[in-house]
Length: 298
Image (cartoon, rainbow, N blue to C red; front, side, top):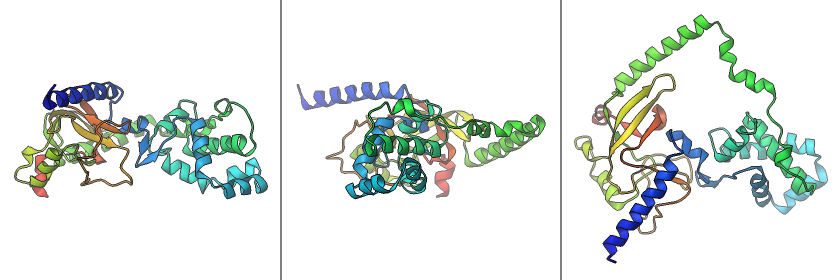
């Protein structure tokens, strides 16, 4: 078998695997619920793994202090704004993650309640050494959070509809000014970088007069209420498609991503691709797409 044929088979196999993963994704935001890593941080898949991960993070000195000085209630209270905050921020309990999805499925609604359940489970299992089912001990969020979620509906229906219509009118005007119109061609901005040297070189050659060389999509739908656009990918440079999320990247950095393509691994559990013909919803503020008019202004 020639090297060229072998390369073709590898790419074909990757695309098959990636397509299966893509079936679970309807929105650009969904990647966070599937990725093992977010901004380079490993995300536990359930509360048992969260407990084990915390046990590796805390030092022996920390564990001795907790065991000697803090009751369960003290531990939950003292750590809410320290270790609890780290859990909420780094394990995606605010912005979305597979751990957040796991807890939401068990009626734990608020991130504060999520981190509290993890702290409680850690203390009981690792500090007290109890042998029990951590999952069976999960406490659902109080009803007040459910009420808070539907709070806007308690306003008068007429006023609610009026406010929504006003907001939609303003959003339509904003979208039109930016050139986001159904059927319009938009150009991919590679916020998570490129997957091949060829694609990377295209970006070095790009300027506001030849932006048509960039990967491009077409707007197939617009959601003015949620401020997002649905884009169908119609042209791409890389055989793998375009990277819509890379959880292996550390930090919250958008823009030019430098990669060593000699060591670049295409298929990981934390990197998601959009391929030619795929359609996904993208938030307006996600900076994945720009119109030709926007590019000419830069």
